[in-house]
Amino acid sequence: MRTKCWVYGIMAAAAFGGYVGPATPVFAEVYELRIYTTNEGKLDALNSRFRDHTVRLFAKHGMESVAYWVPTDEPQSKNTLIYVLRHESREAAAESWKAFLSDPEWKKVAQESQVDGKILAKRPESIFMQATDYSPLKK
Image (tube, rainbow, N blue to C red; front, side, top):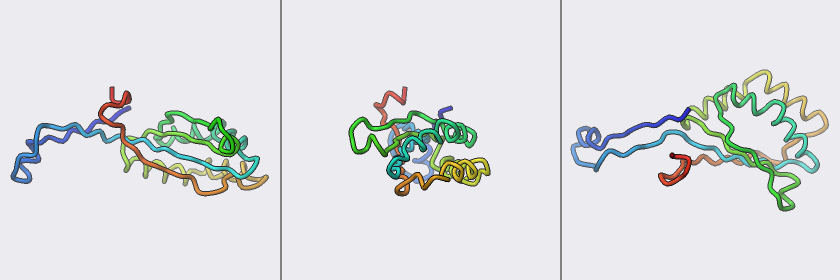
């Protein structure tokens, strides 16, 4: 589901006492680019965790999976997972992540998936993005 918020120049003009231009659509939905770097030999374990559990748990907590990638060139092809999630808003993303991280099923899966060693080499990178007005995602 995609949310569109509309901010009207006329309403802003009334509120702030001046003309600010024509009505401008503002799209509240955001995309989150995440990059995970694994410890040596742990990419398969991370992919299994996502395939078997994480994607479903994301959906349970309101996070829409857009796509998942593994780089084709070394060295990243051996230790990197890149994916994009869609959220209704930054606030919704924060709520979803809070619920996901406190989910007892997720805690159990995370613990069980690391019995043979820690999967991630470092904290995941996260970048929030909005599609441009010319992006095919806006159509």
